[in-house]
Amino acid sequence: MTQSEVDYQESVLPANDPEAEKAVLGQAMMRPAVIDEVRACGVTPGEFYKPAHEHIWRALCTLYDRGAPTDPVALGDELRRTKDLTKSGGLPYLADLMHGAPSGDPAYYANMIHDHARARRIREIGLSLTQVADGGHTGVELEERIEKAFLNVSTVLDDEHDAILNKAVSSWQHVDIGEAVKGTALDDPPTVLSRNDGVTLLYAKSVNVMAGESESGKTWICLHGAAQEINRGHNVEFIDFEDRAERVVGRLLALGCTPEDILIRFGYTRPGVPIDERAKLAMVPYLRAASLVVVDGVTEAMTMHNLDLNSNQDAAAFYHLLPRWIADLGPAVVLIDHVTKNAETRGRFAIGAQHKLAGLDGVSYTVEKIKGRPFGVGRTGAAKILVAKDRPGRVREHTPDGENIGTFWLESRDGLVIARIDAATGMSTTTTDGRTYDRPTQLMEKVSRFVEGNPRVSRTQIVEAKLGNRGEYVRKAIDALVTERFLAEIDIGRKDGRGYVSLNPFRLNGGALLKPDAWWTREPPEDDAV
Image (cartoon, rainbow, N blue to C red; front, side):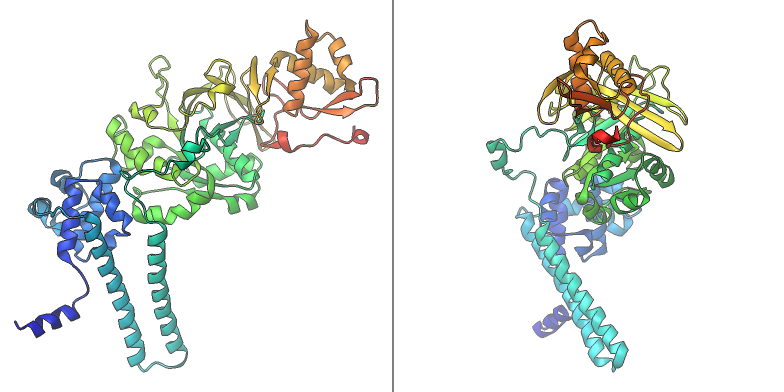
C-alpha cells in the first residue's frame, strides 16, 4: 500500500487511537487511581471508539466506585455479570491489556481519547451540515435541519464547557487547606432538623444516619426535618429504595406542607437499577440545590448494588458510591436504616457491617420506641432519639448525658400530623446563639397550665402560686417556656411590668404539640387580643 493510500484511509476513518485506549485500560487495571485521573480529563465511557473498550471502561468504573479490585479476574467477573465479557474480547484480551500497558502519564493518553472523541463529534456535525447543503431542501424543512445542526454544535460546546468546569483532581493530590488553617472550616454546627429549642441535629456536607426498629418513627423524624426545610424555602430530595411516592408525599401533606410547596421544593426518586455515571449526571443539579437529601432503605440500596450488608468492604464501597458522593455536593445526607430486633445485641448502630458506623462523618442516631406511646392514627406517639456517634462533636453538647438528644412526639388528629422534637427532660441546653438555660420540665408543665388558666398573670404571681419548692426553679421554668415560645412575655402595666400569656401548651406527654416550625414563627398576641 502506497503512502498516499494510507493517508487516504486515515482521512476517511473517524478520529481514534486504539493504542491510547489500551494504555488507559491497562493502567487502570494495575492502578485503580488512574480512573480518577482519566475522569478528570473529561473522558466518559462513550468516548472510547472501540465498543469493547467502552464495555471494559464502564466495568472498571463500576468496580472502582464499589471499592472493589480492578484486576483482570475481577474485571472479567464484572463483565460476565453484565454479559459483556465475550463482546470485550474475553479474559485473554484483558490480560494482554494489563501486561502491555505503557508506563507513561495516563492523563496524556486520556486527553488523546477525549480529543479524538471531540473530533468525531465535530465531524458528524460537519457531515450533517453538508447533507443539509446538498439535500435541496427549502423553506421550513431547510430551517428545521439548520436548527437541528445548530443544536448539535451547541451540545458539543456545552459538553466541552462542562468538562472544564467539572474537571476533578486526583484524590492523591494536595487538598487546599487554606480555610482550615484560618479555622473557618472546622467543626461547623448542624444546620438541619430543628429541635423545639432551635438546636439542629443534622450536619450539612456530611453523611448522617437515623436508625431504628420498624415503626420507631425514624422516617417520620426525617420527614419532619424535610417539612421544616420546605417551609423555610429550601429544596429537599428523597431517594427511596423502600416505599412509594404516594405514602411519602401523603406524610408531607399531613405534616402541613402545601401541595404547591411540595411540587416546587420536593424531589422524589424511586431507583429500580444501580446508579451509574449517567444517573449521577442527571441527579447532580437537584442534589446541589437541596439542603437535605434523605436516603430511605440502606439494606435495599446495598442489595440493589450487589453489595453484602455484612461486609465492611462493601459498606465502604456503598458510602463512596452514593451517600458520600451526595454529601460532597453540599446537602445534609441522612440515611434511614434498620437496627437488629434484639436490643441486647444490637450495639450502637444499624444492622450489618461495623463500617457503617466507622464510615460516617456526621452524626448517627438510634431511635427507640417509648413504651406505651406507639405511633398510629388518632394517637400521640413518642420515641427517644439517642446519639450513637457524633464525629464533629457539635450535637453531644446539647445532651444531658452525652447520649439522649431528645424526644420525638407525633400527634395524629383530624387528618393532620403534628410533630415536634423536645430536648431531653431535666437538662440544661444551649440556644443557637450560644446562650445556655435550664429546662426543669416538670415545673415547665405546671407553669404552662397555670398561665393557660390565668392569662396576663405576672411573674411574681406565678412564683407565689407555689408551683415548686423553690422560686428560682419556677423562674427558670418561666424563662425556658419563653425561650421555646410556649409563653409570650407582655407588658401588663403593673408594678413589675411583666406578664405572660400562653402561645402553646407545654406537656411532658406530648399533648397539644406545635405544627412544624411554628414555635419560631409565631408572634405574641397584641395586648388587646388577649
